[in-house]
Image (cartoon, helix red, strand yellow):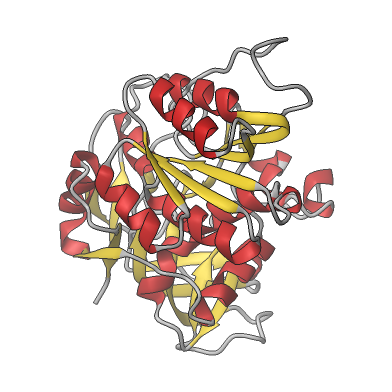
Length: 352
């Protein structure tokens, strides 16, 4: 079968021919219909040999693609609850089921698949979905029945990662509170929607691109703020809009030095800053640098239950899912558009 593989670090992915896999007793063979693309894919192909966090932790030579959806092609002898042709999505984060994190319901922190600063996932150390077929354990598969896999593919990372981050703070979002989402890209657009679906908080969307702010308004943001320069003007605007009160929950989908400093400036006492983005920024903390009793957390990935819940929201028609489709023959073209910032939605590679 044809696959798009990261063959060597520092090189673009390549089409290769690989054997079509066969399911073992507990496996599901998926005929791929859609694979979403992510900026972390670009970080991987750009990695030089031995560089952190990818090339110093895992070996190249795997099929890319970690946002995957398709149809059940074949199941192993122990799989009795899925039918051939049924629509499914794949939770890309691997889990052993045995370590303390897995048994405690936070399998995205699984020790068995952790490599230095990263966790090995589908499309990152393990073969992903940019291939005609993908073999996965039954435990990583969630049925979507007759729903369209093309729409559901980006939910498996972009949407569910945002969902999990907001779930870590949603109990703070009571009536009269506020939430700020920094970076209204693939994750932030879903983030705005989830805050509105899960709470009555006043929602601020922050980005440095006006078109993204317009999209934020379309999906429910109460206020939009343009982030220019180091964000000083934006922080003053938010403090003004909140009457000097500040914001209760801040989700940073960028993770740069300026956005983290901005988050600290707008947080109110007992606020919570949740870092999702991986731009490599740092935050200086101490008296006078961060609001008193403000919590800072790094949100990693998601759980299978998170993905199940996100799929239910989509099934009920409560999510706006913006995608831009590319045929499997144009994977590199899709990555080029992602790199250039020329997409009008999440890039999704579609298979015949």
